[in-house]
Length: 146
Image 1 (tube, helix red, strand yellow):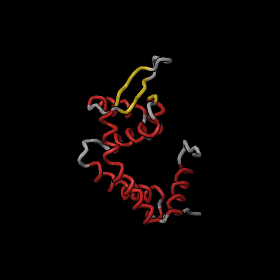
Image 2: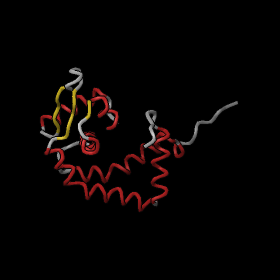
Image 3: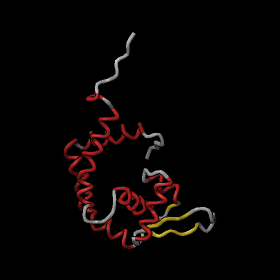
């Protein structure tokens, strides 16, 4: 018995990569004049939403590998976008917080970011948009219901 691999047009990994590109195009355009990367944007978004976090939690919430976050955070600190301090309770932990310059990038692009989301919701419809997020969440190995 021969098992046939699915067509690439119906391949989940390929479809996810194509969809990611479709989602990221307007975000890249929004960030084009900021001097920050998509990964740095995610770090700022997480810090703006949750406040100061230890590096491990930040890496998880920003969907970054810890070693990548270490490198990204050093660059962001040098640009004045974040601050890093040692935890008062555990000196091994770094606490990362958004700096005023980082918050300004978020504030200056909030309207545009909200419009990008609204455009996706209009394209899919509110119900399908929410369903898509729920389905993708089920594929996340660290999935947690929120």
